[in-house]
Image (cartoon, rainbow, N blue to C red; front, side, top):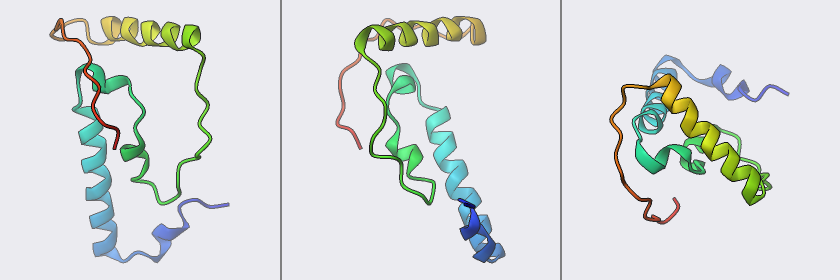
Amino acid sequence: MDLDQDIDRLDRDALIAEVRRLRAGIREHRDSSGHELCWHHPKLWKLLPEPAKPDILVPEWPQFMRGCIAYRQSLDKQAPDATRAPIEHHRQEDT
């Protein structure tokens, strides 16, 4: 099954508009910071033409926390000079 068959039907202008829409979504996610980096991202997934699976797999708390710690440790390696901030997460409504 070709998930991208819709692209074949787009003309040049529609393809350019689609590329711009996707780039804007990727940039929005890339440019997020702080606690926004590690959350569920349905807004990003909605950029694709097919729907996200409604039955996502959610890890149990101990495994989830180990994953969060590993992710944060990877930031120390990949962005050692990034500014650090002592900010707490304040829940925002999901979109």
